[in-house]
Amino acid sequence: MNIHLYHKQMTMILDKLLSIESEVKSNIYKEQNRLISIKTFQLLLNQIDFDAEIVQFNNYEKLACLLISLKGRALTEEEFELLDRIIE
Image 1 (cartoon, rainbow, N blue to C red):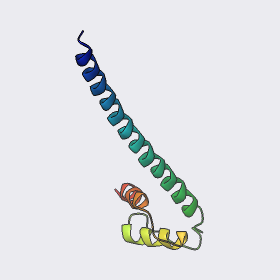
Image 2 (cartoon, rainbow, N blue to C red; image 1 turned 45 degrees about the vertical axis):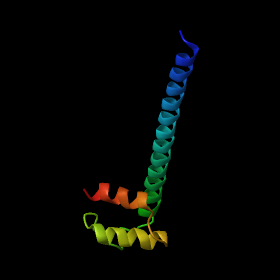
Image 3 (cartoon, one colour; image 1 turned 90 degrees about the vertical axis):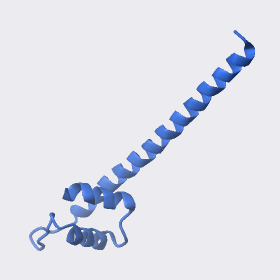
């Protein structure tokens, strides 16, 4: 095999591997943030005294306001995406 052709093929393979690696790392980062959002919501929801409060789990805006209030700051993008999935 021509050494130039071999080098070109090897470079293409390595470039593809770098691209795949980057995609996988990005997905891991996104999934890790989703897990953090899930854990945050679990902790926040466990703070609610259901004997004292009526929580409307099917109302996006009210549930978002409750979670923001419990958290003490704005929800992250991942948390809003999780809230979308919960309300579906």
